[in-house]
Amino acid sequence: TSELKQSIIFLQQNVSNYQRTEERLRKSEERFKLIAENAADLIMVMSTEGLPEYFSPSVKLTLGHDLDATPDCSVFDWIHPDDREGTMGSVSACINHSNCQLLELRLRHKSGAYRHLEARICAIREQAEDRPHLVIVGRDLSEKKEMESQTAFLTRKLLDARESPAEDKVSNSLVNKL
Image (tube, rainbow, N blue to C red; front, top):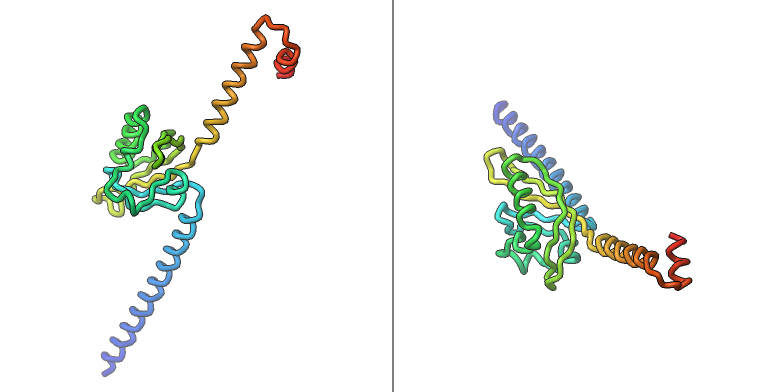
C-alpha cells in the first residue's frame, strides 16, 4: 500500500502541475488576445497561399475585410497589380530563407480603393518540418502618403509661380517666404 500512496501522490502532483501549466497558458492567450485586439497595427496570420487564419480587428477598420466573410479568399488577391511581383518575391524569400521581410505595398480595401501599408512579413513554423504560417504586421501609411503627395504638389505649384513672369505680389510673397 505504500507504493499505492506514492503513486497517488505522484499523480496528484502531475495533475497539479498540469493545471498550473494550463492556467499559465490560458492567461498567456488572454494577454495575446488583449494586445492583438487593441493594437492599432494590422495583424494577419495566413497560410502560404494567402488564405486567412486570423485578422486583428484593425484589419476590418483599415481594409474593410472581415475574417468570417473571406475564409476562402487569398489575401494575395488584394495586392495592387504594380506591387504584386515585389511582394510575392518578399513572401517567397521569407518562406524559403526563414527571414522576415519589410516592405511597402498597397492592399485593396473592400470598397475597391487601395491603402498604402508598411508591413513586416515573417514565416513562422511551429516545428521545423511544418509548413509555415505567414504573420504580417502592418501599419496604414495612406494618410502619410496623401500628405506627401499634397506637399509635393503644392511645392511644384509654388516653384512654378516663382518662375512665372506674373507680377502677382501675393504669390511672390508666398514663394519668398519658403
